[in-house]
Image (cartoon, rainbow, N blue to C red):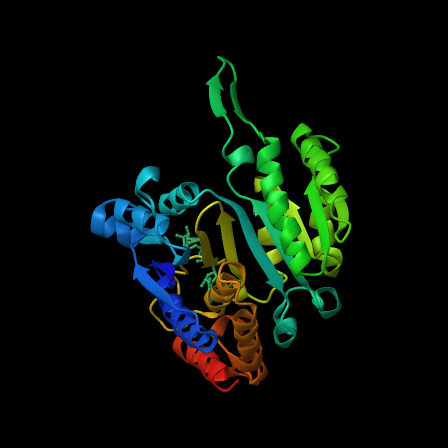
Length: 356
Ligand code: NAD
């Protein structure tokens, strides 16, 4: 029995997860996957109920699960709280607790939505890439400090990576490249940073054993430019934490809306799947949120953890079909298309699955 911890969170989180669970139910039924769902609190709703953004009970629940499905956390109601009590702390704590060192963000330009992109059609046409970001090392976790030196104040942050930290994330990226187009791009700043030079050395050693993978090395500043100029050249991009944070947000613009972008974070234990967007307080409770990112996150879970490739492919194909039918939530609406709410979009995707 496959154990799923369900953490709907705040704002539109519960709305989009409701639809994602409907799709999961149908997809699991079709492939004979047996699972249990146990719900837990995280984020602002957890602060309201227990005083903590990641209550101990939720911590236990996720550790005992095979995978975690998360909606989104946060909202203006909790913005004034001290850092330790803010919803975002719940997210950082769960990543740490599960040792989630690899963040996977696929970005696809769906042909039906190509004209919604801020980029020219010929630039985004056919874009289908994956950013693999190291998630628990580098500058965000290194030693830092601020010193008052009398007439000046100095602050510093340090980037550190060990060879084992680099090897484990590279292995994830290699596995992903094998499942996709077989091309891997290491993004770094090896002309300046020692950590980047270590990433390069280890990548060279590991990829020497992988003749089936085509490898490429690109400096981060050039990568930022290439993502705007010719994003179709990328298949799998692997990079350290801070570069990945920036590049994955930049790459997300290549898809039509945040509401279309799923994500996964994997580590030694249970993996976590969540839409790339936040809790969207501006549209929460209005049946306006696009549930597709959450639904595609379920497809990622089925593919990566349950090894149910066919079920994942079917969900993606059902999404494709509702877009072909012209159904659009607000964020991807355009002239001549049919505007639908969160619930209707989820139900249409379930209908497509049933009719396959
Ligand atoms: P956001 O992603 O919540 O919203 C940005 C914009 O995109 C908003 O206009 C929103 O309406 C729109 N949007 C987002 N998801 C959408 C969807 N599925 N369908 C349609 N439109 C969608 O980012 P924000 O406004 O910067 O942050 C809001 C809150 O979410 C903050 O409290 C922030 O800390 C939190 N946040 C949480 C996560 C997470 O849970 N992983 C990630 C980012 C932000």
